[in-house]
Length: 343
Image 1: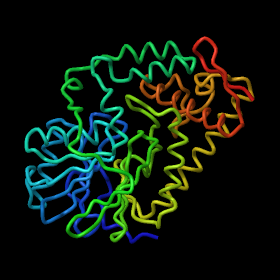
Image 2: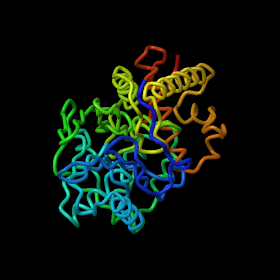
Image 3: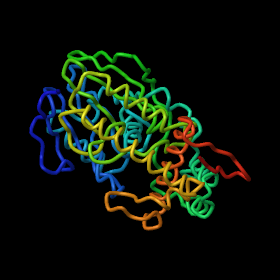
Image 4: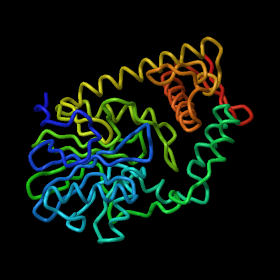
């Protein structure tokens, strides 16, 4: 079991620089996404300048909050030596790119993100591949709604360029007082990585392991064909490591990575069983299965969710059904561009 967590505020989103281990501080930065509230970035003290894990969303309030947190630690924004980013979603990556434009700060991210970063074109909308997948899931009306999402001026200004260098699976980032081991954990995105400080008993988990919510799967420009299969395998990789503190991107620091991984595995096993049961009862497409199942802790119906959440729900069920096909529980056949599942 990992060491106890250093004292944290009751509200994990409270601004500031909160110590989680000697030389490591958690800095929550507000997000324009009400369901997520904030993103944690982690400031690691190093003689060559602070190293920051993840960076926040590139917007003025986030930059101001990070600047203030660094000031409390005796640093300025331009003191940051490098950003180590767990994945390419804007709430993790874009502020690092914006600060690089201002100060030349080095930015590194997992090599597996190269495909989505290369393919992203804001002119194609934010979710072009997801629109295609929704049509395959038997949800053409939902696909049309997602396709109609406009790209606002703020989103058009978000930087989405390439990093200075990649982080590779098995690599060790050597700092003056610690080493950070890089582990590829695809699933949430195909290039997601976590950073493990074995000496201090810390796992910088990004969105791979979150304490209160289950991460979305494959929400990116170029999702891999089997994102849930990859995600479950990535959970096993983390579960096989010695237990550490969980330093998540969203939610409070918690004492045990293993405990939360076990809960996530159990959740997905239950959803796999429920999805298979719905197919046995005659629901044949991912959209039909998603409509027949409850969502969120409040057990809402699919059509009670907002359009973005409906998209995530249907694509999550599609990923579960694909795993059930891999397991031999279901079979799948494509007809007229729609995939149907059967026992």
